[in-house]
Length: 304
Image 1 (tube, rainbow, N blue to C red):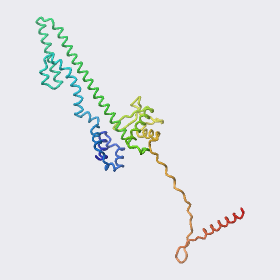
Image 2: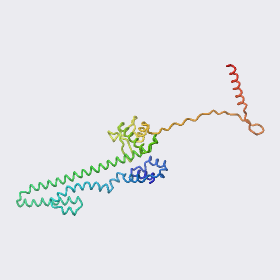
Image 3: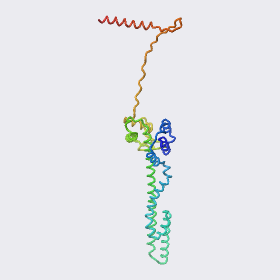
Image 4: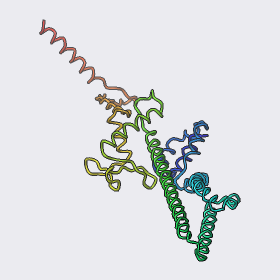
């Protein structure tokens, strides 16, 4: 895979395909389209990285979490099915939700049977009905608990995915810096830069968030407020990162170019004789040299 194609695909998943900084970076580096990026690295990254909407609509993700919840419910339903004679129906029905309906019907039938016995003088009805009602309540509570667990798992998936997206964006931003130590590979420079950035953010009391597909710095104690600099102006992520890395001497400093030397121009008069050919008038230069020699000789005699 070409590196340019990989970056474009990754940017699309992160919602950065139209970001001015990303577009300018791609346009300024056309050679990326010719660099080969090993598929052994590119394919797992592209496969594993999906947008939040993609994760919500991914059938494999949904099946995974549905199976976790429904298997736990089935484990609770199976003993009750045996108790209330629903084992046969359970074996022919794979849907957990329909199994719950089957079990509820069986329990309600059992209650009706006990009520009929009560009407005929069976005094054990009240105790049994209470027990069955308790079983129904317990079943409902278990369903509520399992639904809560499922919601927690989905919330964790969302949080983990957002953290992965945020870290990918941070690494992408840091990979474009001009690092001073070119003896280290790009991944090592980014790892060091990330550690320094994290420390600087902790010191400043800031956190990185994603808003509208872009990295922003917020106050760690009130994430609805921007992280401000000494002049009470909001930091940009790039500005904060550049300052932190520059303070740590990680970035290459471009030496200022020396100013060009000024040379005094000597104008030599040119005369145009009647014959038509230009001649250089060297009389002033010759006179100046002769005067300098005279001064030198005269000064030497005076010092003897």
